[in-house]
Structures are given as C-alpha cells and as structure tokens.
Amino acid sequence: MTFSAERSTMIEFRDIQKYYGDYHALRGINGTIKAGEFFSLLGPSGCGKTTLLRTIAGFEGIDSGAVLIDGKDMKGVPPNVRPTNMVFQSYAIFPHMSVAENVAFGLRRDPRSRAEKASAVEEALQMVGLKGFGARAAHALSGGQRQRVALARALILKPKVLLLDEPLSALDKKMREHMQVELIKLQRQVGITFILVTHDQEEALVMSDRIAVMFEGQIAQLADPETLYRRPNSKKVADFIGTMNFLPCSVLSEAGGRIEIEAQGLGRVTLTEDQAPPPRGESPVVGLRPETLTLLYPGQTTAERVVGGKVDEAIYFGDMTYYDVYLDGTDIEVRLSMRNVPGRPILDVGEQVKVAWSPEALVLFR
Amino acid sequence: MMKAPGLRLYAMLYLLVLYAPILVLPLFAFNDASIVAFPLAGFTTKWFGEMWQDPNLGIALRNSLIIALSTATLATVLGIFAARSSVRYQWPGKPIVMGAIMLPLVLPEMIVAMALLVILLSLGVPLSIFTIIMGHVLICMPFAVAILTSAFQSLDRSFEEAAMDLGETPWSTFRLIVLPLVMPGILSSFLITFTISIDEFIISNFLGSGRPILSVYIFGQFRFPAKVPAMLALGTILVCFSILLLIIAEYFRRRGVARIGGKDTGGFL
Image (cartoon, rainbow over all chains, first blue to last red; front, side):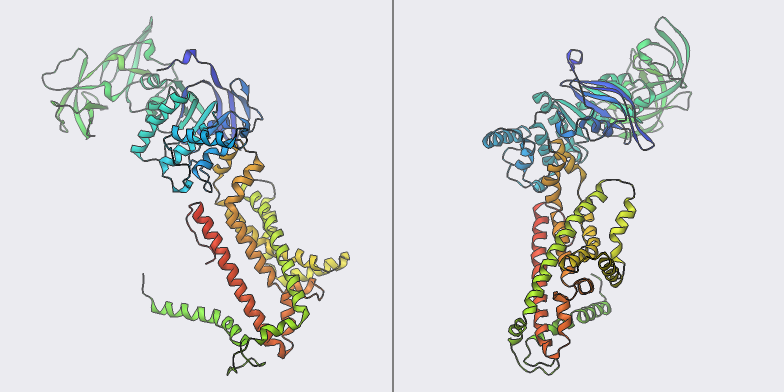
C-alpha cells in the first residue's frame, strides 16, 4: 500500500560522487525518499549502499553533489546535529551501560526532568517489546534484544529519518522473519521515514514501500517491490531480485506499441510496450519468473500457451517443488515452481511434460 | 591434555630457577645474622626496623614515588594521545613517528642515559628529579603506547559513531564512551610504567646527580656488608608491595571485563 505520490520529499540525493582514494564508490546518485516511507537500499556487497546510508547520517563526506534532508543541504552538518538516527549492523550497544542508560543516552542534552526522561525510556522500551528490561546489563541480552535496544535508543529521539544498516543480518532465520514484521509494524506506528540497507532481496521486498537497487555505486532501478519484481528494467536487476529464466530471442518487428519477437523454445510472441524496458544495446533475451510457468498434469487443459519439455531435475522444498525442464527442440533449461497440493505428485527426472505460459509474464531485455 | 613428563619437569625447573632467588630475599631478611650465608641463625624482625635508621631511605622512597607517579601519569597520558592518533587517524609520516616512539625499546639504556646527560649538561639544564622523570617517560613510552594501542584497536568504531549519532560531540563521545571502554588498558599502562620507573637504575643514576633514588640507594648500600640484611628486608617489602599491586590491578581488570561482558583474553594473572 503506497501513497508515494501524495507524500512530501524527506531526502533528496543530487548527483552524489564519492571516492575512496582511486576507488569510485558512489557514481552519481540521484533520487528522492519520501516522508514516512519504508525505503530500502538493496544490492550486493560493495555496491555502495552502506556508504550512501552513511552519507545521510553524516559519517561519510561526499566529493560532489548534495544530500538534502527535509529540504536542507547537509553539507558541513556533523552527525550529532542531523535529524537522523541509526541502528548499526553491530547494534553498537554501549557495553558499560545498562539497557535503560543505553536508551536514555540520546536524552542527555534534553532539558526535560529526570522523571520525564525515565518515563520516555520506559515508553520506548515498551514500544520495542522490552518493557521491564531497563535495569539489565547490556551484555546480558540476546541478539534480538540488542537490536530492540538499538531501535529504542534511536527512536527515543524522534528523528525525521531512521537509518538501519543491515539490522537483521546477525539474527537467525526465524528471528529475522519475526523482526521483519515487527519493524514494519513499528514503522507504521511511529510514521518515521525508515531507510534500510540490505543485501537480502527477499527482506527488501517484504518490508519496503520502495527499493533502490544498487550496483557498482549507481542506482540501477528505484521502484516499488511489485514493479521491481514484475518489471525489472535490466537483466542484472532481474537476476538479482528472485529467480528469472532468460531465453534468447530476436526482435522481428516493432510498431504501434507492440513488439513481435521470436523466442527460443517459446516461438513467436507479441509483447506490449510496457514489457520492454529501454534498450541497453545487449543481445535480446526474454525473462520469465518460475511461478509464471505451470506444469500441466495429465487431463489438465489451459487457455495459456503450451510448450513441451523434459524434466531434468526436481528439487523438493516441502511447500514447493522446483523443476528444471528442457524445452523441446532447444538446449534451454527453464526453472519453474509448483505448489505441492494434493493431486500433484512429484514428477520424475526424465518425464515428458507440458508447460503452460502466458505472454503477459514476459519481459524483454535488449 | 597431552602427557609430557619431560616438559612438565622442565617447566618446574624453569620456575624454580626464576623464583628461588626471590624467595631467598625474605629468608635472610628474617635471619638473625649480619652475614648472608647458611646455616640460618634464628628469626628476627630487627632488620625491618634498622633500615629506617638511615634518613636517606625515606628521602629515596619519596623521590622514587614522585618520579614513578609522575612518569606513569605522563607516559600514560601521552600514550593515550599517541595510541588514539595512531589507531584512528591517517597522517603523513605516521610510521616514522610511531617508530621513533617505540625506538627506546631496542636502544641500549646506557647509551640513552649518557646521551641525555651530555645534552642536558651542554644545555646547562640542572640535573634534578625532573630530568629523571623526563628520561623515564622516554623509556616508558613504548610500553604505554603498545598497551594502549591494543586497547584502542579492540574498540569497535561503531560505538563512537553511535554516540555521535545520538547527539554527542567528538569530545563528549571520547569522555563518555571511549575512555570508560579503554580504562583497563589505561590502568595496565599506568601500572607497568610505574613499575618500570620504580626499579629503573641507569637513568636515575646518570641524571639524578647523586640524589637519593630508591634503586640507586639500594645499589649504594650494598657496598656496606653490614647493611645487606636491611636491604633484603627492604627488598622483601617491595616484593610484597608489587604482588599486592598486581592483585589489585587484576581485580579491577577482571571486574571491568565482567561488567562489559567481554571475553577475558588474559591479563596480568
């Protein structure tokens, strides 16, 4: 659910360039993050996402360009006076202080009375589900609890922007999934702009209103999760987000917003304009996601188009089975996923199958 | 555990050779004879009283304490600056400057002492307690910097960033976060440099121009055979004092480690 269009701009990047010596870390970052948005910076390690987050916090200077927070240029503004707070990857819970002292740390310069501050701390701890933990020593906490303390400590200052640097990467899978949901709820509750850095595409898709996918110091695509998943603007983004099958193809004609292609294994297909992001001069391929392909079991019919194939591999995941299928008449293998429901036995390797697909699911990269 | 009786025996012999001479100290300090030789004559505590007959001992002790406390404080404070700057910042000539600080570790102390003496005399600086402190700081700096560098290195940088992020200035961050977390290192540095200064002889002898300094005083007393038992008594007190200091330091170090929930990576004991 996004109302991005109506929201005001909270952060604006203007052609940011950043070098570490000879290394060009940020190569012309442009974009805006809206107020109240859950925004993610997603990319492989070394893509500059953490560097970009740290330029917002003020821990990294930039060589040219500008970072604007709530309309103000942050040039020369040190981290301690920026309207941002950060949850560090290591959480950075001060080990020589109690939980309450950690949470209250940012209130040192707050003119409120001691009692008022104490109740603010208690309120913050309650918000992150750590009511009554105030007196605990910081080192006696589990990973998940540390993260909650880090959240409470950052949120107690009511920043305009909360920066989260891979906050879930140190947690185990169950805890991570739990915290993803908690973070989303927390963000809705406080209404603060959250900016999350992550290399986990699933995490970004689950949590974000919008995502900036970064490669090599540049934003490759900035879009909402659904657009990013269904209509990636390049093969690289498509490959990074989830799984996508790529089939070589040739463009036959292009007229009136319709593109006629001949794809290996699929034959002739007509695509609409929105299925073809701007050309990049690469050799053309069409991409399609595993879940847009369906195995037809004996007796099943479909309105979709059908192609024959042979099962090369069946990978069982419990709720799902992934099949790698060779398309008839080609040496191209596609991966497709089927939900394991009654009436759908797991197919054997070598079995001949029919695969249903529809042209709307294709994306053309060229 | 691997069984190696040969190695165990070797280790025990090693410890014996290392510590037996020190155990001789109290043995003869309580011996009722002015000659240090077996058989023992009988038990007495008179040497502990006798050594205070010489007013120079009191002066020497006071001088040495002033020197050691000043040296430990100066070397540790300067060491904090040097270690922090070396760990956190990049500046031109850093390897040369840090190398120069560590150099006294491998320079023969005799040469350092002589060189200092020649320069001080040629500059017309009067020899005093201050010149000894200066010399001691010079030779203590490598130890202080080595200890403090490792303390600063083990400090996660994100602690400081978190404090600044939460509204603190660089200075208040240093005071509220960095200092408390490197305090065990500061304490170690202080104690080590204090100990080095207290028993340092060469510089104290060269730059003190005959002032009573504990190490120089003890050395001088050994010229008189009759004074030897009293000096052994003094030595006994110093050994006990050292052990006490070590225990106190270790207590605070362990308490510090436990308080921040860190992993104990070994201290003095």
